[in-house]
Image 1 (spheres, rainbow, N blue to C red):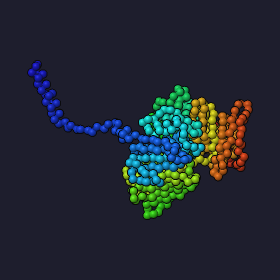
Image 2 (image 1 turned 30 degrees about the horizontal axis):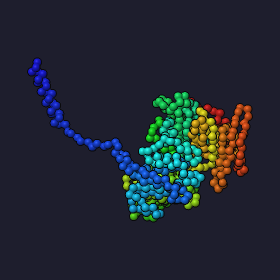
Image 3 (image 1 turned 120 degrees about the vertical axis):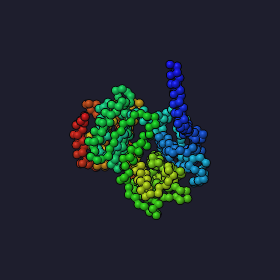
Image 4 (image 1 turned 180 degrees about the vertical axis):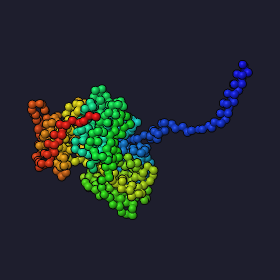
Length: 516
């Protein structure tokens, strides 16, 4: 017995030796997970807020280690605070001089900023927030109130809610039907943003479960919400038309809302019908002339090996964010840039390369960049009458507001609404069904149906803004109008087509959606 056991042990040892001798030892490199942030920790961003150098603006200086997307992050911080960037200088390698500014060995960024009233940034809490927000490793949690009275919180609402992303053909009443389905499913809309451009629509809605008081969770619930909304889009689209519905769960690293809207519109190819372009200069220059005075040109900078992109258009808030966001998402690196404005005209000059180090050599690539930049500028251009709404927050509020627009024959070209405690605050840009100015009588009917405080801002091109503010108190028996002031004097001509469309919308509004 002992002899047999001894022989078995020897056999096992022999097998182990043979396997070990045949085994190839492989050495793999070890990557420290902290390595990605090593450079940033060695050279963290240094932020300086200077109110002494310039007489009429605050100078924000940032010296930071270079990484892809860092310029967009900085611009995003400033624009989220409703600050106006009137001038900017950016350089990410040494040896460049721009308008008297000498570049340092590290990337540097200069931003000339004011609030929307044209004042310098002097509030200490706001200055501290800018420093903390730009230095990602020192982000604070303190709430900051912007110059427009809107609070900015570092944990964005998009990180705490279930997100619904929709793209498709822009059709009257589409947002109304979408929000009606959401209300029927007992999901509360915490915030919503909608853009339209070139007959395309992109919308992001942040939802929460009204019954459970939390996020829309569970595979079955999310699938049910998505299926119901896909039915709505299918009813509004012909066969073969592009459309998409996507429901995403809350996540910490979710993309900034407005950047995500740009991505959705670009993936939906809204830029394809944007412009016509022509080339010249031996095939290394792309030039485009567009509506609304937008002009984009692309040249080759032989001395430095960059593609030079020049943008000239009417200045407006968040213009720099829109162009930098587009270049970043197209995987281009901005090595140098000079941004300025002359009166109402903004001038932007970028020296870029693709992330692989190549310039814009092909005709198709230059044309695509030209079209995408033009679309990014046009998407946020407002069209129609702006109606600012402040009312009590409740389940189905967005459905009620958009139904009032739809039943009165109005189309929504842009919208943004969010909740602030017990109140819901939003802005809606509306036109009539043919895209023309809204009739004053229709506006009054919409006011009474929506309730709360409704401020009308007439932003038609060529005319100064006119504002009408009214608080509407509605009851079953009567409508009482209080707080009337600054009534708009110019009354657009009444359209028979608008009246007919309004009546058709009221009739169709009585039909309920078919549940599957």
